[in-house]
Image 1 (cartoon, rainbow, N blue to C red):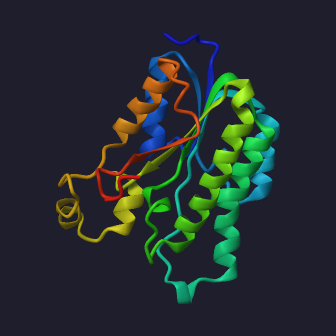
Image 2: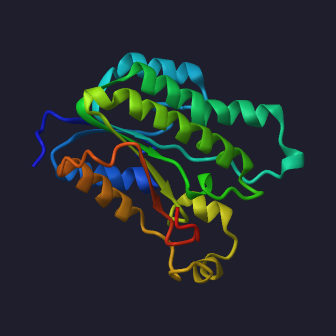
Image 3: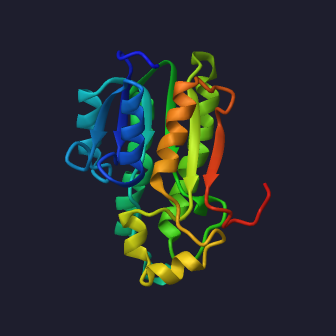
Length: 219
């Protein structure tokens, strides 16, 4: 059982995947700070800076955020890019740079399986999450000496409000998936708990795909 003195900060922790991670870490005695948009709006850099001043360190950090709606390439605007650049990249960079992760701590980034196979509908999301995944890899290399484990979790379709907003016929969509069912956020919560509780470290720098075998690549 993990010490009660350990602290976890979970962005986007009030629902979906973030909520399930919070539940699981509480089971191993973590003091969990669940952050909704009320605590930090990563699309607003001033909100992010205030958050960093208030919360200075953690043993586990979960970088998690909802994404932009589907926007066709011809309809994208500069304002779209600016807003989501802040939300999905620049704010996460500032948090990684300024917030101290205690020695032997963990950073989990909840990205998306579209970083491996971008489509033509979630262009902003796939572009910025891919960029953030690259930054995270560099961060993981820098943090090796402090034994901070950095893991990129890339989910496919999971039963969250986000997917419900993107899908018109949920049953038809679910039947189209390789496993004929959508992912359960509880699985990612249990995965994070397992890694932390068992002090799994050699996985650092890796991207773990939770996509139900949607992507056909073996790499």
